Structure formats: structure tokens, C-alpha cells
Image (tube, rainbow, N blue to C red; front, side, top):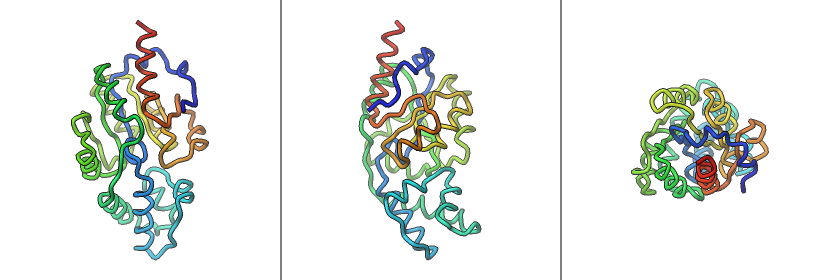
Length: 222
């Protein structure tokens, strides 16, 4: 379901220098795993467990803000984040729809693909190995405190424009700060109406939509 028209993709999108994605809730479908990790953290701090809807309502980045939203004491936020990332490492997950199609399109367009995530690099690489997609990732940046800084660094390394796909408003706003093409993934942690408030270029629920859009736009500009 493409919610915003492909016409909103600027012609410069056909010359993007890197495709960068968030991990949890974006490349991998792991909302259930994240909810389980969250409730284990809440148990550690003797706080009430939450349900799926409440998780999607409360989840936010950076992770310190999420810990605060869960009512974790300020002095314990860093520990809560460490626990959360650790518990995520223990769970299994699967790819979101169309991820393999995105990798194939990136190969066709000769565009590097990588990850910028608040989640730990250890967890990301563990997932990638289990899902057999390590070879498709040209770089992985985990435990990122400022995604805009990370994206700026990637732009310096590979050139601009770059494209960033994430499943939170924070992801979109951080991408916009550095002039990246901001794509929202609507099948992750945050609901689509919330994502639309950040004004992404596109909202997708299947990466096939993005890969087809990129390839079609390239063909139109040739």
C-alpha cells in the first residue's frame, strides 16, 4: 500500500548514493519480540506490563525517551536500555515484506545498503546472520544516539542524496535534518497516522513498493 504518490520522489532520487534503513520494526518484523523485551524490562523495575497497542502508542526514539515513557526511573534509564537490547538478542524474528526485493533493486542500481539503528550492532548482526542477509549489508551502525549525525557521516562517506527508511516519526525527522529522502515504513512499531505527522516522502508497508518505485523512476528519467 503506497500511501503517497511516487510523483513526490524527486528526480534526484534516481541518483541516491546510499539506501539506509532502521532495523527493528523496519527491516525485521519483531514487534512481538520488542513487546516481550519491554515487559521483561518492566518486570525488572516492578512496573506493570503493557499490551501490544500500548507498546505501539508509547514507543519512541531515542530509547531514553521510550524508557521515560514507560515510567522507568531516570537513574535507571541506561540500565533499562541495556536490558532491552539484551532481551531482544534472545528472540527470533523475520524479514518484513519485500526486503529481498529492495536488496535486488539496490544491486541493479549499484547503490550500497546499510543500517543505522538505536539497537545494538551485536543484535543486528545476529539477526542478519540468522536471516542470511549479511552479504547484502554494506555497513551497520548500531547503538546510534543521534541518527542525523550518523546519516550525515554516511552522506560524507558515500555522497548525497541518501535515502533513509524508518518506522518512527523520529526516524523521519532525523533524516529530514540532513536532507535525506525520508521514507516511513508503516508495518513496524508506530501506527501510520502517527508517521504521517512527520511528513515523509512516502509511507510503505512492503519494501517491494519502494524498490519498484526506484526502478520505475530510473526508467522514467532515462
